[in-house]
Image 1: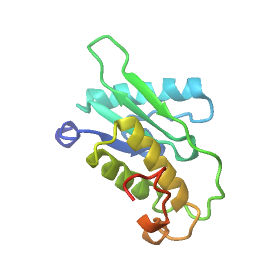
Image 2 (image 1 turned 180 degrees about the vertical axis):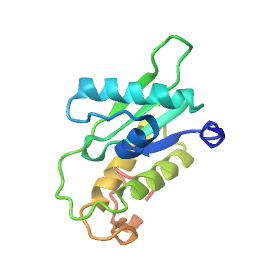
Image 3 (image 1 turned 60 degrees about the vertical axis):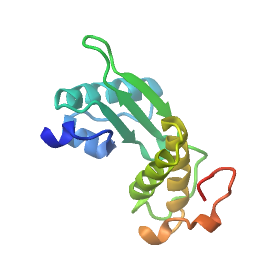
Image 4 (image 1 turned 60 degrees about the horizontal axis):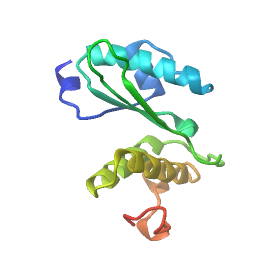
Length: 148
């Protein structure tokens, strides 16, 4: 719990969210996604987290912020982009989190960073390998990835 309280944003995928909270994250239905993500977040908030970002594979990502006592947490969902042919998903979460950190460090808003990170992760799954699947800056469209 001490480590969790030290996080600015706890970043987890659906499986990690379930392992930490015991709640299955339902990505197939937007209404159930929000309900299950909020339920998991409330359990994690009890463990002293205050902000949680969940990556949801092809369903995008969501950010939950702890609210005042008695109020439900805020929920923000960035939907996944157009379907892509996934060759290898190894490293997609690392690609997402690396891009998220780069976007945030460059001054992007959280929603812009989540969107850009999702786009980059969707590119990485279209190639085999983990690190070797990460696109090089020279391959990125400047309008979609202004950090490149």
